Amino acid sequence: MTGKVVTVTSGKGGVGKTTATANVGAALAQFGDKVVCIDADIGLRNLDVVLGLENRIVYDLVDVVEGRCRLRQAMIRDKRLPELYLIPAAQTRDKSAVSPSDMVRLCDELRPEFDWIMIDSPAGIERGFRNAIAPADVVLVVTNPEVSAVRDADRIIGLIESEEKGPARLVVNRIKPDMVRRGDMLAVEDVLELLAIELVGMIPDDEMVLTSSNRGTPVALDGKSKAGQAFRNIARRLRGEDVPFLSMDNEGGFLGKLVRRIRAGGD
Amino acid sequence: MAGFLDRLLGRETKSAQQAKERLKLVLVHDRTDIAPGVLEVLKDDLIAAISRHIEIDPSAVRIEMTQEGREQRLIADIPLRPVRRRRVT
Ligand SMILES: Nc1ncnc2c1ncn2[C@@H]1O[C@H](COP(=O)(O)OP(=O)(O)OP(=O)(O)O)[C@@H](O)[C@H]1O
Ligand SMILES: [Mg+2]
Image (cartoon, rainbow over all chains, first blue to last red; front, side):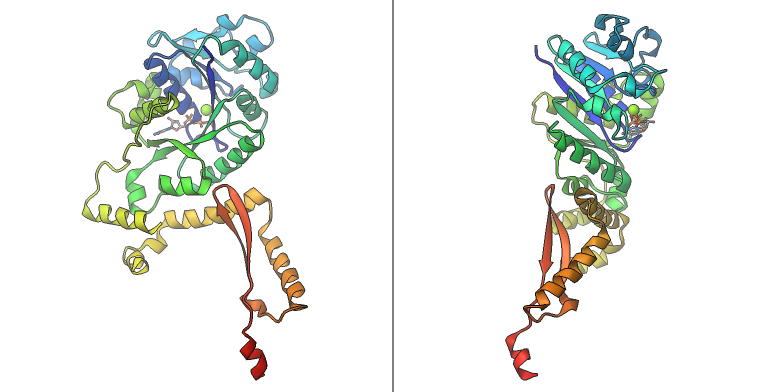
């Protein structure tokens, strides 16, 4: 086995990196792949709570890097998905406790054992981001259809290109189809045209993301959730399947459709 | 036709369209690290240089940056005066 390292990053904070890491990781594990998620957001760990594994943490990433435990001991196994593991971030340290070459070494150790190594990057363009992208084979750039998030995503994509990490692939998260239809939210096509990288996922804004993070069960494991379905589709695309993109407009009357047709033709 | 429909459907004033237009400009400047004011200075220099050789209308000169994929391009549009006009005066 030669695992692929998928780093999830964004530039702007709060756009859904942790949510995407947890859900794409869970979906890959549900499809039968062996997955380890690494929380690289040292000092602000969250992947543990989104995955519902917070009560089982003994050792963390910094313990591994500083040799206080073996790698195995820091890997928490998800009981619902036996092929899903988490290496949590240290909560009481800062990002300088880990270096990009530590991350490369760690991932090289994990690659033979896993199909996928998912890394949840912190926001920003500092050390934590550099740690997270250093071992990456694929980088998922998460953004929201919003001016500041798109701008920051563009900065990040530029940095990823200049570090020759990539390809960078785009995840547009928290899409509100009603607002897009009214012309009050950037459509995915607009964001794609601006950022000019390949799209790998478009996730609707979905209340079930919040309720499932309340419970600590990834929404991707919920068959009824639209966002869950969209995350599963990302996982399938990463596995090389050719999955058509979900239509964001589940409804919309005649005029809505007309407007969309004209838009599509006019742009 | 498209323009008429756009107006009928109120497209020009939609906030998403504004967001897109604003982002286009912001991204070009972010990517090239060329501040908006630099283009104005460049334009004046260009007009001065060209005017030493050719008669042009400074107010018609346009300089802009465009995006093609993730590549940026500086485009200068300098309309030339027709020969006829020069002869008449
Ligand atoms: N598709 C979605 N629909 C609804 N809510 C969402 C969606 N995606 C993310 N959220 C919510 O947005 C918030 C931020 O998400 P998340 O923590 O994943 O972002 P982040 O990019 O990891 O943030 P940070 O930069 O702080 O690490 C959370 O409350 C999450 O539940
Ligand atoms: Mg996060």
